[in-house]
Length: 193
Image 1: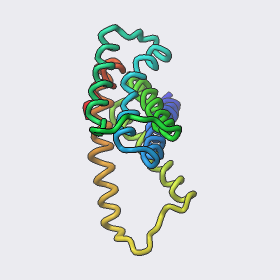
Image 2: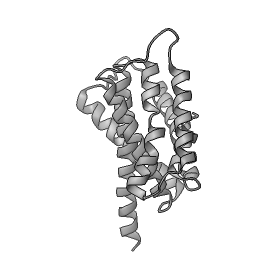
Image 3: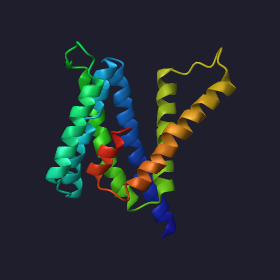
């Protein structure tokens, strides 16, 4: 039944949007209360989490090579994000960022699941529509929309530019790529951003 499939696709895409948007929200909240280097390091721990998430949800047992590569990626990211002369330290507030990383790990595994059931266009389109609606509701509910004194055409242009290139197009590449590689490899590739 075509109507039933469309309804199922909308639900599956909404879950994908909830995961991606939730990860972004937690990461953004965490970034507001920790240092950028801690945020980058903590967020990228999703690389190490993905093999475990895939093992739990998809019964894809990670290989030793996957663990080795994930560990090397984590060490490399630590080296790149550590500020010289400062010790890496964690505060309770960093848990928001860590929770965001966990949600991103689940999202990566979930998008691999979706890539075998939906077209790349639908995997990209549905979650981003959900995120747009979800964030608009949050902005209206919290009163974080200020239109007075704003250059509306420029604001629309900037939002469209940020939505299309770094978000939607990269999402299409991610969805297409995840059809071809297991979640653990996808997470390592995505950590190279």
